[in-house]
Length: 183
Image (cartoon, rainbow, N blue to C red; front, side, top):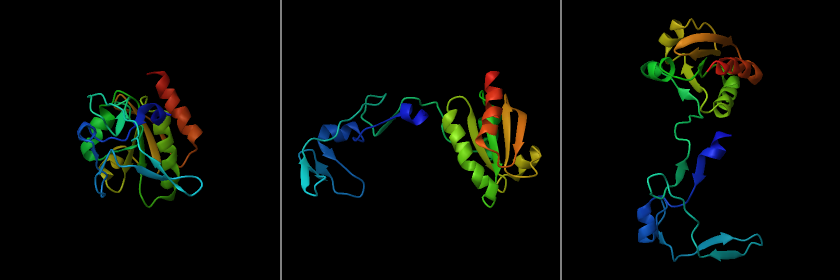
């Protein structure tokens, strides 16, 4: 949902490329606007297209490859370690969903796509994070994590609720909705 409204893709990487008339592709020779693009036609014959694709202009006036209209929206799962715990979880003004996991844990791998879906579905409303308990045992012991996967919900830096095990998405949605109503 958030990605459809967020990104607009264009084909020119910089305004300098547009003004000089050269386009550079990574690991390829540069070519000129007057060069033709050869695209295969549906019948198997080669067809020439002489005009370059359209471009878009970013917020700073330069032409860019990707323009994000919702720059402060995070729609992915963030990795939390000891160094960034305070900034990402404790100091967050939004509810934070933290999954405690380990790479060797089968149920953790089952719930990871659910957490990613929640991050996309609730982009801009909550922050979704993951803590690898093997890499950060201090955070796990601070919150009494005895089994994984465990999902904790934080609001205003305080632990509000925990969900243990690989639960269905509907269970996590009801927990998240409970803390969004009070926002």
